[in-house]
Image 1 (cartoon, rainbow, N blue to C red):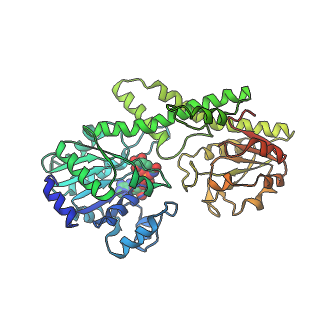
Image 2: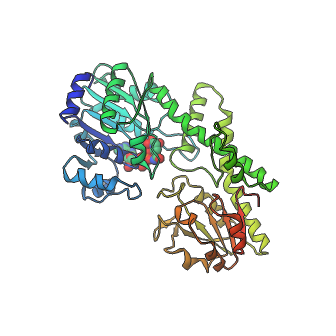
Image 3: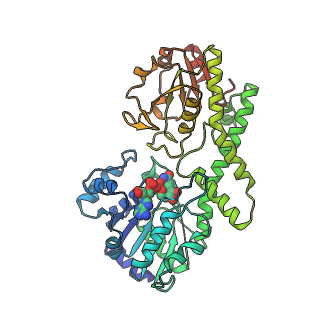
Length: 449
Ligand SMILES: NC(=O)c1ccc[n+]([C@@H]2O[C@H](COP(=O)([O-])OP(=O)(O)OC[C@H]3O[C@@H](n4cnc5c(N)ncnc54)[C@H](O)[C@@H]3O)[C@@H](O)[C@H]2O)c1
């Protein structure tokens, strides 16, 4: 995999063998894209249930439009299968993509455990002349300072000599992965110019998007983190502004809508908190890099603090609604509308909903949940309701935590069925005057009321 003509031939003849290690939210669509391009692709995962589901033709990512069709096609033509056996998969592959999770622990310290442990396995089983591409989001320097040492740890193979490595950080958005994979530019960095050219050629063959050449792995990973942390910091900025605008009776959404007309203003919205597998972790990854390098990233640290305080503000708005109705929150019943960390996906990783639920419980409230993506399942120890209309007459207040499409299109009149008509909107989906016209006790985060 270090000869550009040989790789080109292996793409044209479809003889390049691909292994994707980690076939979750990002890895599975990645593997399906390689298989759709006609390349034999095998997905490796430690999750036996996931592997079984794939091998029994049961597509696991129902909230990713467009992929079920591709999945059925590449399963049928034999281009894609899954296994838990990494040894067997690696022994048959020349191109190894790592799409492993990079979460953080309870103390917000980023963990590279999955990459390190697969790196150790690869140090024993990697085929000579392989190419490894790391798609996971990592701190700048992780490849150069950590992963290469692990891969060379058994003194079998050496980077630049018997194998090569690069990165192509993933920047797709859950729920829109097919669109993003076929439209968004991607970054390619590696240990040398030749490897970068080879990765670029392969990704161009599979995705046909703009591929941006980076000088090395660490710069590519720095770009990936910069784009996401930029959002975390800007959301903190509007969150903090929205707290002040509430005191001034100013609707933050009106401010933002007008501000975005200026060409160099980039809009970000206030809300109940920033969750998901990317933004909060990416900020802590940069903070980890700052610690290691003796640098200061105070704006990121402060932004995290602001965004992590937003659930408290949602609680304050809720208490204010109860106060207006002269009712105690203790022993009341509160309906949480939306638990996903972002609209229109089934994903509760680091969702502010969980924090808000726990705070409400601590105040003595009983919690009910409605989320169209989790109907009938148990989440955070609570059974998710099947139908919003049926539950409303049993609750005292509703809090919109996720701006799912269903909530954006909701007829506000249904909330008058509640025992006390308290509606809290933490995502700017409710029109204030319509809420008032419907006779609701309405509190909107950052809406000046
Ligand atoms: N989900 C996103 O929005 C998103 C977007 C861009 C980038 N990323 C990055 O992509 C990477 C993957 O994220 P994801 O959301 O797909 O995670 P995920 O948790 O959905 O998938 C990771 C998969 O890896 C498997 N796995 C864990 N340890 C393993 C091991 N030792 N061997 C084999 N398989 C193992 C897990 O079982 C899981 O199926 C992360 O670095 C993440 O930051 C995620």
